[in-house]
Length: 126
Image (cartoon, rainbow, N blue to C red; front, top):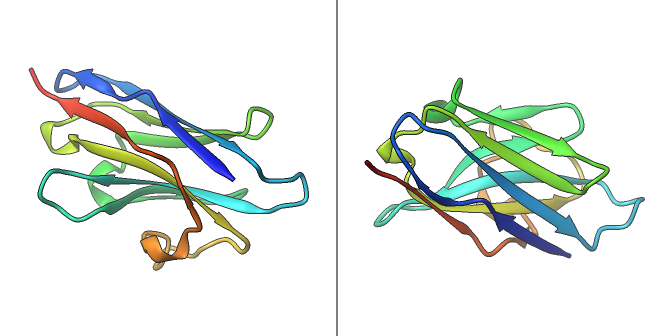
């Protein structure tokens, strides 16, 4: 299984950016869920958003600004980032979990994910 994150770059405060996570290696019978995490300089990695076939979760600081979506035909998960702030500056990682979907209280726990992408840097600055 491989995850390829892309779409990062430099964006001005208030601007928008869309990250993509291309997933390969799962078979059609596999059930998996995807989450986006981020790690800002000097900070721990944190969960940003999660998606399975029926549920989406967001961390509080991005609710109403970020939207996660999934295109199963393309095996790709997106993170649309709107109204970005300097505090959104971080390396963004996508992660995949094989098996059962997660509930709201645990989706942000890194150890629950089996596969990780390489990360894409998002810098919010004027």
